[in-house]
Amino acid sequence: MSNGAPFYGERLPDGRRSLPGERKTYDPKKLWESNHEILNLKVLGLTNENVAEILNVTPATVSNTVNSTLGKDKLAMMRGSRDADTWDAAKEIAEASKECLRFLRDAMGDRYEDVEGNIVQASVNAKITIAKHILNDLSGLKAPTRLDARVLNTHLSLEEIEELREAGRSATRELDGKGVGAE
Image: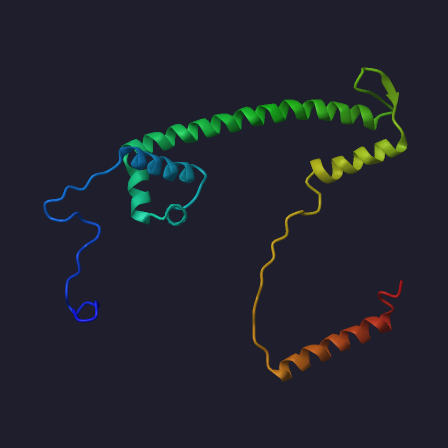
């Protein structure tokens, strides 16, 4: 090697292996933390490739950790805990929903009970507000609040750009002729 670069076909030392006579050591605490991080991300539903990218390890390392006996046992336990928490939350939501629906039924009538237990006459505005809430939020008819924007890049020639402009002008003239947007 004259300038530090290897010659063609020259074997370089493998940095992953320990030198002859030197013993490679591992820190069990760091290995356990790494394995635990891998399993936590897998429970969240990430792919092996995503986990590997996040933790700067190879997908094979993720696969080995997940498919090991300890990894499988730990994942099963973590998923069971997650599912139990989800089940408990679903039961709470079902109980709260029953109370909310009772309140809404009462409010849609002429009278409902306030926080202190007093019977109160429902105004028309209150009924309208409640009806909108039921229709929009509870029935699933609410307008989407998450927008999914996708971008398409393209290159157009001057002729293509002029064709698009003329199509827009033509559409505008057509709509103007029909009186659309003249409010």
